[in-house]
Length: 389
Image 1 (tube, rainbow, N blue to C red):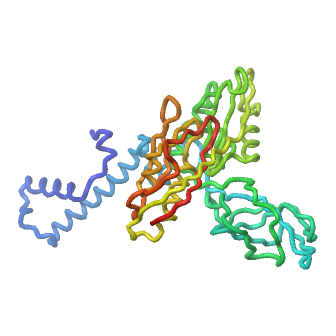
Image 2: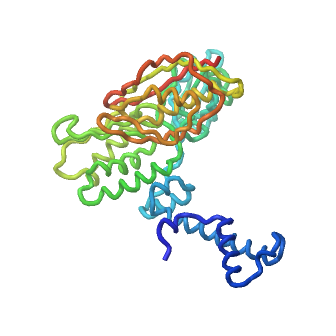
């Protein structure tokens, strides 16, 4: 009988080959005289390879029982797990922006209809118009037009630099700052999907338990990726859900979606207190850092800024403490697939999936002199300014 530990451990070709040759030798076969190219030796290798392939499949199936191992498997294995719960992975979602548009007097009037193609680029992000109704620009008054990032994911949550029109009518201008209407999100990770699926079980019975919110909130608003649920926060018997998306505090639309889902008669138990969903308050932390590089990484500045901002994007809602030593480790290129974070009297784990990078030697200055406390109901938003010397 194969034990579970044995079942979830794939065999190696060398181990199987040795076992097969030993068995043949014990049975009297002259294996010592077989060269690596002998037909009988090739047959043993082929047979061993088939056994190894079978053990890899067996180990993957066995690993689905162990959620700590399932999370590290290929996505299709985790998708099969989610199917047991009647769930599918939340796909990547494109960010949507409300852009205030005007036009020059010479270009007026310009009418942007639902079929008009307008593409705007800001930094590396391209957004496209998805106007539901027509907007006419007369050269004086401005109009708000909805745009969607061309590529789904969190990259679309930040528009850097001065926007420029790369496709569309000539003469468009931007009198106001873009406003993020709906946050983009990356595809649900294995760990996130496992948490959501297990949270679905919590809907059975009482259905208004702490774990149940781990299922209901991201299902109601897939772009909400971080939340904290507090009891009695707005009165005796009440429930308060504090929400954030992949980059910032939750948008009004995200808050409304969660409020509607959790306040519905099909979800909220009779006799329970009021439910209220609110957006987290943003804790904007500007980190200025000077790093000594060894000259081997031409992208060192970008790597550091990206890693620090990704740390902020994965950080839990407050109360939580950002360890200054963690900031130093990330800035020096440390790999952090999983991080333990202090949240009051206990800890939680986050999965920023930081692969690390090379080229950083030391830190000569850092604006963050001590660990930073993120207060209750706040979401950390890190902006990193890096100088490499």
